[in-house]
Image (cartoon, rainbow, N blue to C red; front, side, top):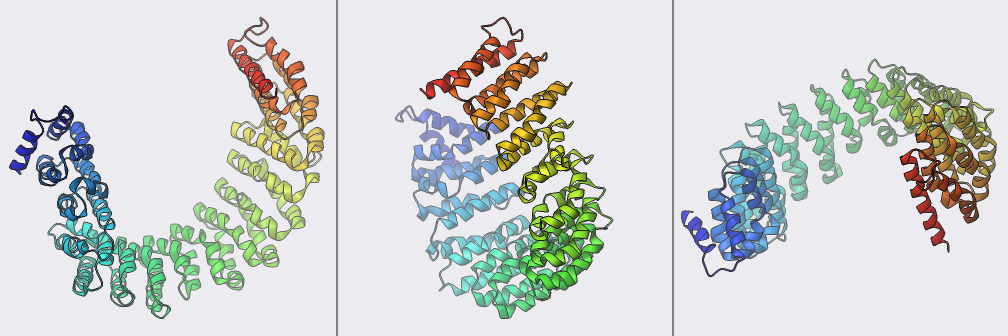
Length: 606
């Protein structure tokens, strides 16, 4: 190594080299600098150094020099592991020199720091994937590497090895039966390792290793290993078995799946709530025979976290078992869960229960689900109410308008005035969808929903007012100009005229800007423009006049060119910096910007 170091130093500072060698020599010097940031910088520039010194010297001098020089600082090692991946192959002269890269990566794959090991393994994998399956490199280089790591004294080495089995096994030629058998044996050994971290690593790689195995070994060797890991005394290992169950099920022939399903049934009753939690989350994806009984048991689990996970999968379970089993087995449990002592369980139920409506059909939904939905809509916790509101469209499409109005509308109206602003916000966001189903007559101002849509414009919370403006625009888009003239615009004008709070007057102006985009020019000029020019520009509060100038920019494209020049421009000029009428410099500045926008619009249309 000392020879390599000396050779690099001398070779990079000779007089015969070009002036470009000076920066390269500096980078090499930085590899030994006490400042860690400089060492990291130099490592990140390894491709530059390698390109300058050539392929042979990169293999014989640079890489040995780097390994010898770099200390045990994790940040530097991480940078090095990141550099030595498949992108570095051209700098060493091609794949025929892969061992030059694998040697330092093998060392890095054994260090104590997890992120360094993982990055080294990623780089090794990238090198393996750069080779085509069946190439000699897998038998001559990668297989011995995996074997060495698997048999390493340090558990860190064995953990890294588990990630390399699948790609190496798949890359070996089919004729390498002995090497493949050895890899299976080594993986089995790691799965039974005395160190729990190694067993966890092996368990986490079960699925990908199964994908590389021949079908006969998936059904035989790996399924037996799967069963052993499912009995591991560490719940963290059993968790990983559950995570890989779906992958295993997809690889196994139907005749061999019963063994896997039996394992899942046992894990569904595992002593660890964390394992049961994960089974509840993954059960419907694996879909074992007899799933429904396991799922019902998980819905009634003693741990709230498990019940929550199962409740979140209600719709998936219902789709798997069908309407009859859902009504017979799941709905009775839902009647218990809507009164669950844990609010998170009720929230999960609220988020899933309406997904059952299309599955159960109208009659069962009206008889069984609707009473439960009404209970959840009145829950004391806002998150529960929010979860129901977010899925109301799934219910209304099943039960029909009549029952929606008679049973749900009173609850919706009550929630629209909920003390929690997030609930009010959620109701507003679903109001347009409700309007499509109910029609205009429920949104006129002589009806409660119509009054609410206007009342939200003066809500104490800005986010609610903002959503109310968007909702009003969507209602105008849906119900047309006549509804805007008869219902929406008079309310906006009233809010501006009667509000003592300048914030509400600003909200009215913002509503003008949004409505202008969905109304015709004639309506805008007749009903909206006067509010801006005759009232807002003369408001005593500068902020209101400032917003009015901004809204002019928003409204201008939806006015006729005549209205822009005859009415809008003079009003803006009166508030611009060229006029003495406006005393606030910010308002004047915004008016100037609006005038520039008007000029731009005029030029565009000429």
